[in-house]
Length: 309
Image 1 (cartoon, rainbow, N blue to C red):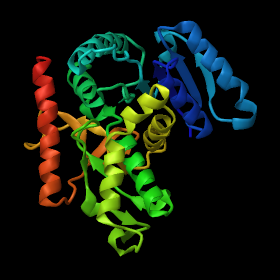
Image 2: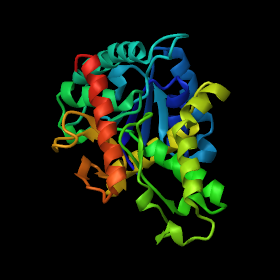
Image 3: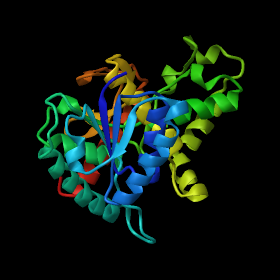
Image 4: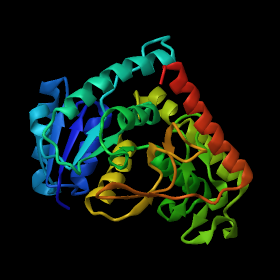
């Protein structure tokens, strides 16, 4: 798959793991690593390049904003870590400042008219909303990673509890990438068959897997300082859909105009391709699942209001 990819924030755990996942997936023909820690980005590029003889894949180099010109996809993973005793709202405010500086650089960059922005930095739904409303690009070309990672976690954890192949577990987490994420239990399937048909399945197993999914980020933070590998794999799913123009349905985050979700960016089943968002689909949810998704939208509205957005 051809195309140029730039990763802003590539010296951090998520950025470097994303670059590695893209390399192993053979994504793109060139990857540019950019970070305020310029030497660390150079080191990541050097390290990845050393494995290219075996891994193949794209040419990888470090550079500044001038190096991201002609990028087909710009991925933003840059962000600040939470300080001890710092409130979530204050962290959001600090990350917003950094993110808006990046948006300013992107406005002045020599990027093609059909470039796609993929936001990974948290809070991803808030920052996707900011990018979609402030960057000046068509809304369809601004995508947040959303609940793609949560969906992968849910599938993996449910497969583990059931003792079945997680790659064949079909599931969706929708709404916010955060505490109000909304599982679509009614859509669970295994290899095309409703999951209730499997003797290994139980509602309790699904609920336990979801509880573990919702706390997975905090658990990774407690055990090793934060998630990274699975984030890179999730990003690779989205990048592949864009560069290969597959139209794959993924729960990415985007700004919505429908009455129910107006004024927020959140995750719904979305067809993703070379033009970014090709189509947002309406999931067939149970009344309780729909209520949970509406609650997720309201949580995001409240957060935006607290920020003056």
